[in-house]
Image (cartoon, rainbow, N blue to C red; front, side):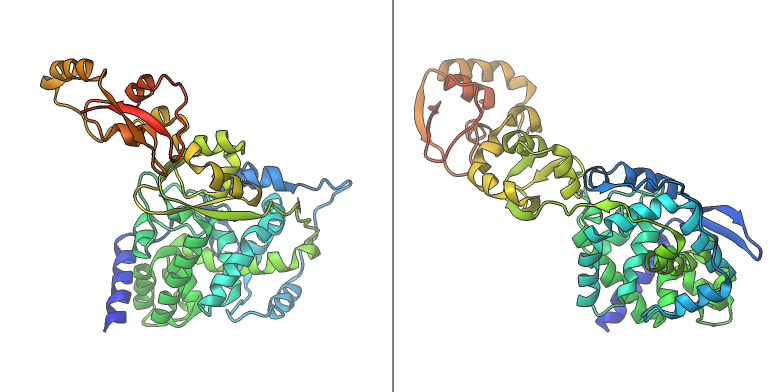
Length: 423
């Protein structure tokens, strides 16, 4: 009964808020209107300008380059049939159009994706294997986001797997003003696998699952009803939203292209392995500017390694959050964590937790002026800063304490003694 409730909830989400965009720009083919995602060009631009691509890939320039000659139908059919897949990968004219979209019109995109797939596919395959799902589902990220974890569609779908907000939250992803775990490659992949597993429990057919991932279970169920109960993707094809009709063919084409690219003179962008990384847990508020300045690390690298932090802020006072760092910087972080947390804190964290009533401002100023000369010694505890200590003394702020201690440095160390107002 519990599982039934979960699946009904899943259907409700997809009926009321479709999972993905369902509009596209039309390209006429011989037998149907061929619609591709309108966000592809934007995703390509974002991918090419991403930190990973700029630092870890080099596009190969081939002298005397000539476009390849498309294979014939028999060759496409034979190659698809040889792929070791569980998911059915049939061939027709629409699939051919999609293949040729990748190997001709989107050649640059494919060559960059071939270059950076090693950043994401090992993790995605490991997670798919954990949930006993077909490994070829990894190619959905090719169709969804062009392997760009910060991809954002016009309708708000985000991340490698292009979750909309409601579906992301349904699968436990944290999404608020500071955090968007749809952009976290690891957490979003785990959520996508659970989502795909739930959809397979409903349909028992991977092509229908992939279609439902794109347009929502509600639209697939409607198409099944209009097709008199048929549960074959190709039988309900004409009743699906226009873009979804092409989504499964694009998935088939992605499987083909990422395996047979060499036959089409596609050359993976050259890559160098990224630096080894390590993860540290953050238990206090921290800004990327603090980490970047104290550890002398490129802020853009921090953002590339931690795309889930939308505003470059880790709200560690709420709960522990993971921060991925180059392994060479992880030890330095452990040594300098308090210096990092205290650096420029008064300018980077300006949200006030308490303000006095306007009517009490005059009295507050008089009280502060009288009591500022009465001080006592305070021993700094681990993780404390002038900001956190000032909050213990109503009427005083970070600037007051730093002036009282005759210092311009906001850095504090555990065990250090500072002057504080004597209340």
